[in-house]
Image 1: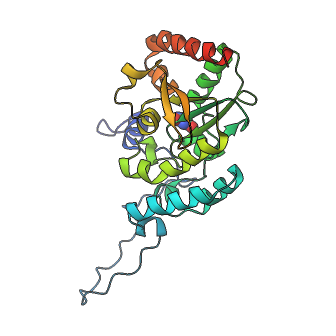
Image 2 (image 1 turned 180 degrees about the vertical axis):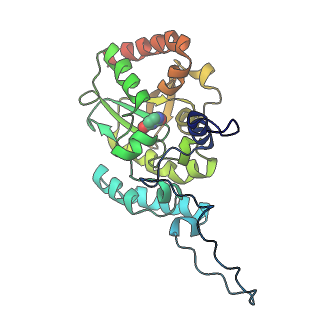
Image 3 (image 1 turned 90 degrees about the vertical axis):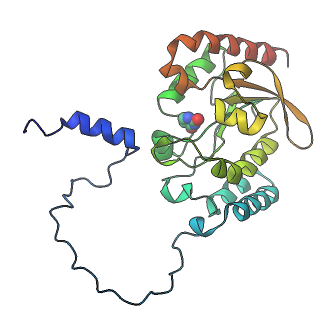
Length: 260
Ligand code: URA
């Protein structure tokens, strides 16, 4: 390798920073070596072809209205999942591998809402199965909760944003009716918003650091549900010193569950 050639680890780190987290093919292709197509003759402008993805063609406002209608019409969680699987109004669907709907027990008294699937969740079609999900399971276990029995877990967005970028306000607005309906159908006794984006979107929280561990109310249209914002496990993996804050918040949650 010449001194000017970057080390493979540097190239991989650069890819990760740019949001490239998936290999598209088994073998690399040198596109610079491939024969280049002959320049196309300049022709008169051709009318634009229709967009291939309905997702890209739907205006955000229209998409949010259509999501609201579909969500309202869903009478069960299965119907809601089917409606979301058929929805073409969010461009994230085009780049995601799977719809990540939920995990856990739909009859649980505690519902957790995270941000959006990452690469592991996208592959598995289940929320919180990667490193931060494993930490979340340990956090729940510390207060005697298991994913399979005592909690129901979903995300603000059911499709992975490419490269795990933060969802845009438009993506959140389009998908919001789905998670709102999911909360309505599960009808938990306690809602836990895991991290900033879900606390902002569902509880109108401005600062997760200021709001974490404080009881708020989530209005589901027919009643209010006690809601607790907590720090996201992905943040805790990056800032382990703040696990002591998370522990305090988990004890707050446990006390409320015990009082139910
Ligand atoms: N982070 C989230 O907010 N949700 C997941 O499902 C995984 C990671």
